[in-house]
View 1 (cartoon, each protein chain N blue to C red):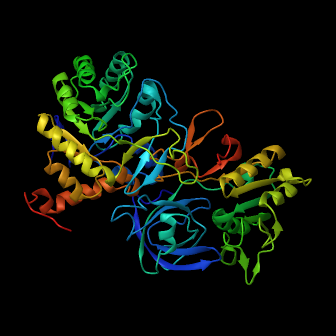
View 2: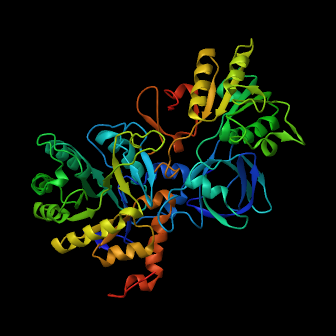
Length: 280
Length: 298
């Protein structure tokens, strides 16, 4: 289903602290429900480049969860304050409005769409990249597809979203395993350590891996899956001015030469269709 | 109803070349894009003789009230464009202007001939912000190069030829005069301003190519001054652009002598910015006849 043509104003329903992150919700009366992996271009109606300065361009943010609302749909976004755009999004007050374009981009494929022999899914999220894993996890659970979820964080200050997105009642969902580099939660180390252990198992080839996170983590996931012969889909990020194919900024190198535009050819890409995930 | 070089347009707002991919936008937004097309004419991305992949990322960087880009003209090449893109662009409900670039006059001639012979094409914009490989000079930075190029291309077609000026010169009006003397039908300005940024995280240039072009509201006052200077120097109709974000901005460019205005970077923020600006010009009478000499202090 196409996104409505143009941007529209959506009201902020809620904005709350979630660990080191924030989760805010918009009421979208016009757009269709987003598919897991899709994103929106967001800019606050007020104090967004009006007096000059930054932020100027809208920010591409993956949707973390959605639900039917009285009118239209509720859209939940997980954000971390890392610059002028996300700073402003973190400050959104209930009742103020946000310019929204979307839902944009493609979405995750089911394990059987990726590999007809697949029996289950492994979701690997890092940092703020756990957001699209949350909506995808719920879809997979609804479909009755077996899954494991591996989530990693740098440290306690750079973590969040678990209570709202990966818990049932007061406790972490039983399919979720945590890793943290500072050891504050779960395995001390990288989330890819957990993935490597799982991919070493006998039945690893019957899984499809889905991942979103910082570029270095995504590259590690891509390389691990390539070594293990396991298919993977990566929800990537790239500098993006428009989100609808106009600016050509979000170029990602393809293995056969040339570039894809992540906004219209992604953001979800098969691991074997990217050369490598560029990272510093 | 503006008449631009014999092309009837429903309003004076078009897009800047390279800032709107109507084919991709139709995939994203569906046929509502056609029903409510934001521009009165569509200018294609620049086409080159051979296909180009574009530049290595990183390609864009946000700056105060604007952005720097160095995209590198990714396109399918002349043959790929004519076979693949042109039939799709012909489905747009507005006249089509095709932007072309080449690095020597022979290739430029091939581009203009190949594009001009297609009925779907209403006009051709010449992107002259490129070197002539024989002289090593950027064509659009040299009046003599610009005039010689126009003299080569002018006999090839009766369709309007629009020269897109670069702002990265001391006297853009001298290049505009050369374009006029060479037989151009119109001039469009400005292209992006040469610009750099340093990524504070690395201390290295933020754009992989080292530098790029600045666009957005940050360049608007520069664009207006160059428009005024060119307006005073030539009789040709002008397409004014550079940071236009609102109907009031567009009205300023029209008041300064532009026949049409083009919207570029603002479309990244608002995919329907063209319609918003055209509707604003239409509905706000004060924008159509600005009070000459009025002093606005805000």
